[in-house]
Amino acid sequence: MKYFFAVVILVVSFAFVATPAMAADGVIQKGSKVGFEYTLTVDGKVVDSSEGRGPLEYTQGDGKMIPGLTKELEGMKVGEEKTVVVKPEDAYGSPNPDGFKEIPITAVPKDMKVEPGMMLQMQDEKGQVFPARVTEVKKDSIMIDLNHPLAGKTLTFKVKIASVK
Image (cartoon, rainbow, N blue to C red; front, top):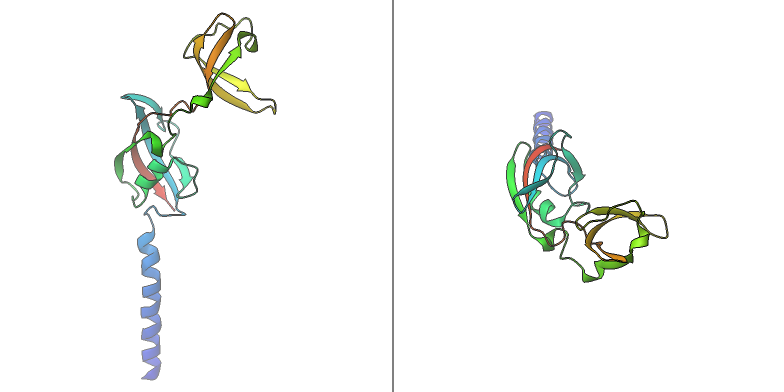
């Protein structure tokens, strides 16, 4: 009789330990490896989408995604869909006035027609390449914006969770 009692306790303990881990599977929580499909719109225009590229993958809580989006994805399950609106302060922040610079027109190739709104690939003294948006063209110089292109923008994501591990 003592032998039978010990076996029952072992089985019940195993079921109790396994159940919470199984319940968490498929739900986004810190440390989860997540894959999700998305369409990003800004001011009603689509600016990015995972369509045709497959789900975007990230690790929940690793700090590599914008905070407002990861906060809203927390707790979602595989197959779940949601529209997430992220304010600038929870995305790329407000434009930094120090991000606007005036550079000599000679900094761009002579044969390039520079226009406002144009994106340039700039290179710093260390050889790192970064994007810059032209905001104004003057006679001898151009004004560039080094802020993230989505700084100051409200972002709207339509998301669908594809995988959670």
